[in-house]
Image 1 (cartoon, helix red, strand yellow):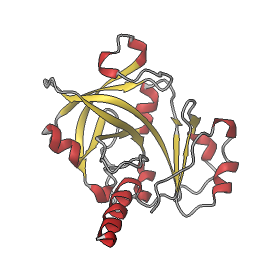
Image 2 (image 1 turned 90 degrees about the vertical axis):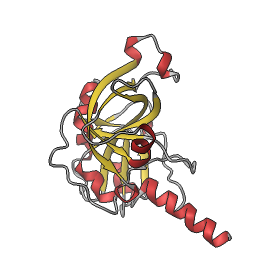
Image 3 (image 1 turned 120 degrees about the vertical axis):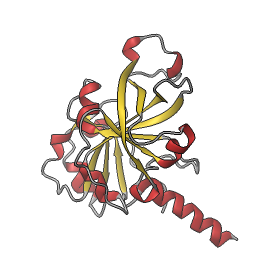
Length: 212
């Protein structure tokens, strides 16, 4: 039984972090993506991740979600590659568990409130300060399964998150931090090489991944 539990836990971890082995998380102040321009793009991916609330248009049920800004470099961490030909602008990919819970299909529109990167407020559905959230209207273009890293998360919990993936250039611009990221994933890379390309390590606040 213990072996089966261990295998199930590994499967959950793999579905959340894919091929990543290092995560550098910049909680309060994102970094410019171009500071990593000298790194091999095959071994890292810039991500802009934050919490928020989302609901299907014309539906009153709201759900706590992760909003994750990515580009095609995120594919390097997936077991199954995803095509990005139409992944531009106000579009979204969501994970299968979120789609099933909310009865969302491709072509549906989502209303999303993303927590402002500098906001410490947590109860987003009842925030009255308009500067605390960034409102988005997104068209769902793809539904991701676990092999496509749809359940991406750095949380050690066995609970799967509700994820919304959007183009990082679109999300960063809407949040007023154009071409920036607050999470860098790497694989098969020397941590020291990555760290040398971060211009200010005082911003660095987190370097852990769940145990594989």
